[in-house]
Amino acid sequence: MYNFIKTIRLAAIFSFVLGIIYLFAKFLLIPILIFALIMKLFGYFKFTTVKKSSNQESNKKHDDDNFIDAEYEDVD
Image (tube, rainbow, N blue to C red):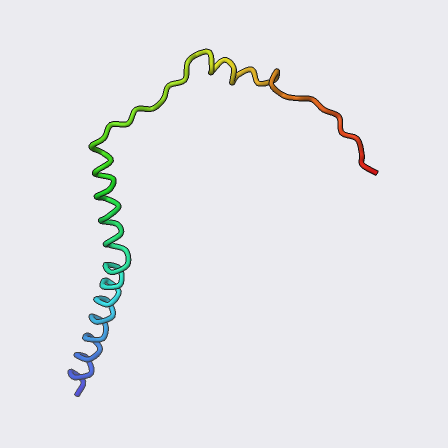
């Protein structure tokens, strides 16, 4: 009798673990594989980054001249 209960308990544990693996595969594995395939396809195309010229970089460093100073009055 004890062996029967032990076998039922082991079957319940296995079914729980396999059920969790099935849910993972059903909801996550397929989207992960699709994402990996899409990233692999993007890997075939070579995208180059747009490099900024030194003139644009110097303008970014000196943003103090680009600020607009204004004084606000209280609205009655």
